[in-house]
Length: 566
Image (cartoon, rainbow, N blue to C red; front, side):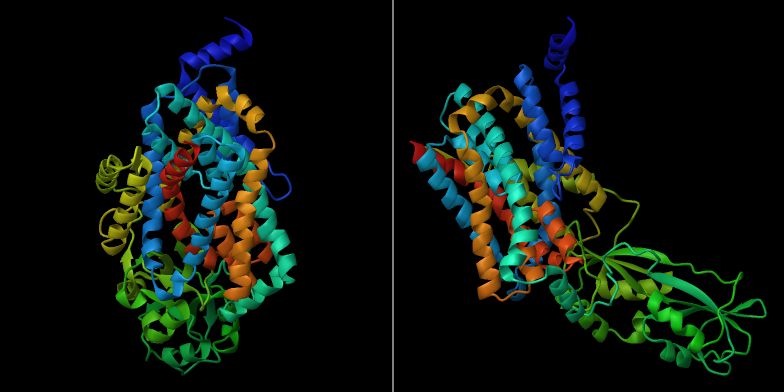
């Protein structure tokens, strides 16, 4: 046993080695950038797995594939649930039109491709999944194929075709959505995306600096000033001159710290620690006195991540919240970050916040607690995942996935994927309403989503390898063309809807278009072209709708393809 044949034999007898070889090489391939486009780790893993699968009979255990996909799809629903439910309001529901356009378009194009190209069920499902750049459809479709009244050999072939067709159409779809959304659509609209994004940013109340970018200097700073100009004035009067987004944390007199109260009168040569936003603190010298070194004074901020649950914050803007809360109540607390799902939103007055969003606050413990009580529930940083709650949710998902609704001779079922997705949505929503349990840290959720999907896709790719060449020979250039159409047609329709009917600003229009395809590379390219995070404001809403709806197309496209092909 030597050379390549020995390696292949080892991978066949020890497929777990093949799994991690595919993950390592796939994520390395996924990092390679050509212009602004990279495949990403999951698509890279699929390509590597198909190539390795061509070399021999290398297959992962079906239970491994099922568990990996269940963990991925449940986590996807769990993270998306709060945003999805919160978006079911009059203001956000209009963005659901983009998801409707996506669903109708991809089903129509798939039906046309089935009739014109005589596609089998697996190839049709893979074409839809890749063209819509929605990996989860691969799992829900393969689940549905397993329930078809066919032989085991036929089912295995169809499931393998899903992975191969997906890999071809995904690459075409990824390139298409990135180029259209970040380059061609702004030209068609005859706008400068960067200028439009800057204009929208100012309308939302953003400053001249990009608050969502990683700043070169800290956003919140502390400076020590020696009292000269403000001698004889009390703390409340000085704070009134400094502005709302500053606070006096400490006052030292003769080396002794004083209790800071609004009526505390400042004396000549007192040392005062002023904490606030950088651009607000820089003018404190003109109000208090010269900046000095204060060895006995130090900024000591506590950081809190808070889930938004308060009834009055069901759908409001950051600016409205500021106006509703008295200055005295929020002084000394600084907003650092707003997160929806796994995306950071602009920290500006016009940004809408809703239940399930997570805001990061900084301030001293006393001030923080006062404001946290008005917003929601503080996350415990020591808890990464509540395995009791998550495991119960997965059990519920598996049980729902076992339900079958016979339609003629076609057994329509959500399968493991659909069942776990719906369970994730429900349990994620319950968690957002009762955040004292069910914590699932965003970093942990991201690892589970990425690893679960990558392992599942690897299993699909390895089993697809032997049939990949024959499938490509059978359909030739037709699959790439259909993949481009699957992405481009709904994108053009949505551009017309966003631009001519809804009259959305360009950043929001392009964010919505990438959101309907759940395309992270697409919105990243748009965000880079825009120069700020304004596209994410529409992307996160549409992404929540599409993230729930598109995976459920797996059983539908299988039933449709089976009916049209019979």
